Amino acid sequence: MKKIKIFLGAYINSINAQNLNCRSLTEHLDKKRFEIYTLTLFSGELDTPHIEGVKYFNCFRPHKISKYIGYLWGIINCDIAYLPKGEICRWNKFWVKLLRKKSFKTVEGIYGDDMMKQFSDSGIDYGKFLESKEGYDKVYSITDFLRKYNYRRHGMESEKRILYLGTDTECFLNEQEKTGKLENIIFIGRLKERKGVFDFLHIAETFPQLNFFMAGEGEDRDRIEKLIRERGMNNVTLLGSLTHEKLADILKTMDLHLFPSRSEGFPKVTLETAAAGVPSLVYSDYGAEEWITDHENGFVVDTLDEMENTVRELADNPELLKKTSKNAVELAKRFDWKVVIKDWENVIEELYQR
Image 1 (cartoon, one colour):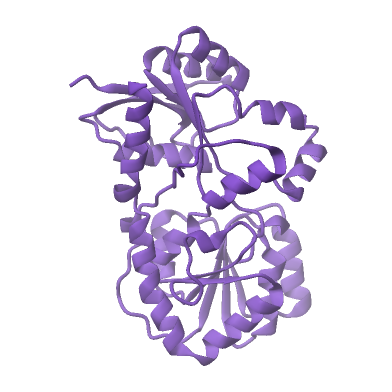
Image 2: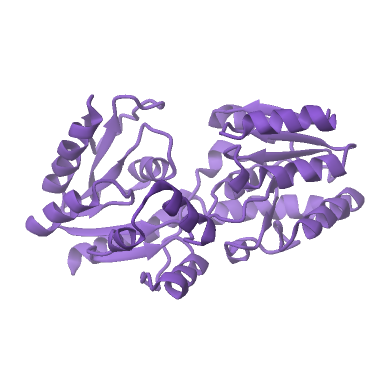
């Protein structure tokens, strides 16, 4: 059977959501059915995984020139181009159309008020941004909530079929039963206000008897350190950026993942912590109830007061935390790449056969 040639338009050795998703796709797509083309970056922070059946184009310095060559190389060689990044869209769409290649992309964020403000502050033309979502054979959203929200708010259309992202469960898997005693709470993400870091610090100040950890770096780290000093919050530890291996080790000692961001697409960190038996406590704004069942395999709240009350409830009810911890592992397994990759393979094959 002829293999389908798929171009994954991202830099799989560089840390970014779309890059890491494509890195996982190179690993999990069936090499008996697909021949894969993808990009690497000369300044990438990660090693390039040398996988049989995967061909790479290394974008050299200067990147502002080599990226055009790299994307053209991928489009020329492929049957289908997956283009998740908002990079050189007009160039890519020109060659896809000229060479009569099929293409698809994913919409991975909610374009709410905070995102609109970022566009405005950055001088991004909102109209041109919406145009960048057009011109593909198929556009898929990564959650149903996201699909409905962006259509209702912006008229941005995508397929009814949802293309969920997966997680590499085995990297974090910890099926050892937890005690249920709430002691250690972790935040994982960029240290910036939009991720809810100051809500996290409010919870930490409210519960001085518990230990709070923040994994990640970001532009608000100095503000966070200053606040910790001024408020005398000796129960807060900044861990900095962590590798998957180091994070997996630390999660073995954590009891709860508190993630107070209000603007996300599909935060895979909630699945990574779930695999380690660490349930997440999150806000409902981006539709987390689509995969987290409140008080069963995690916790979904609307307000900071509700978040505070949930932490108090867990501190007083070890059996509830023990139950959600066990169920969280099963949640992660449902979204393992080995499971969801079948949807991606079906989408590629259906597009190829059109």
